[in-house]
Length: 339
Image (cartoon, rainbow, N blue to C red; front, side, top):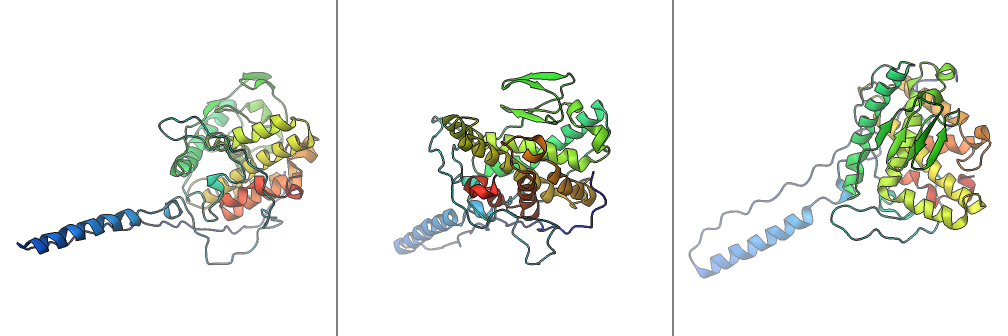
């Protein structure tokens, strides 16, 4: 585990934009036909003004406007790319039905377009970490509720069909999912498949990480990030591209890395939005999670589908420092940023 870290500043503070007040028409007293006509015209105008005054999504309370201050740069932070060549997104649409529907797009997905869209700053209270099966279940169950409270309103503001993922805590050497049989090991600290989030305690490596809840929380928030992608439609759109290219082809592996690195960025957003807000996600947890990201990625796992350790860290830190979902648009990043 990394050694002691400096006290890190955090960007952003809560910012709520209230909806404009509705106007009330002045009483019009008159007995002549002309006065009545004026009153009718006035009411029509007021209705029109009220319709125009309905706050657009950019004024929703789930935005967190960047601070005017210029806090110090977090150590080693490489942010999301300033410019990018977008990956063509799928133009599939979900079947027409009543209620919210997924949007099967990638770089041009609606949730990735507004540069000021971010998670609302919230208090998250978690039980103390205990390196036991029961302790881990209590910790992640509470964390899931915090993640629901953060991402649910955000996604619903875009009229996306949010539902909470089902939690599972496998205890064996393997477990069954709709995605197949998963072997528990150092590469399976948590796993997501089809609205189900699995956390096998044996995969957490508590003998190595010990009492470091920030590390476990960042891992869990990454897998929850895949649920955000699933609900939004990003997951389906990405997998279609992967299947078209071939899972082990260069293009298929790159699309997989884009998907994984976005989940990293979403994880960073969650911790960045909740640190130092009065709950149990404190600066030490945040610092430990920050430094742990450099230990994860394809350099460690010797694969090619998650991104290098450096990119694994840089995308997490991009989300953590800005809390802006537009900074998590890995599908619009150049290939050099998702290698």
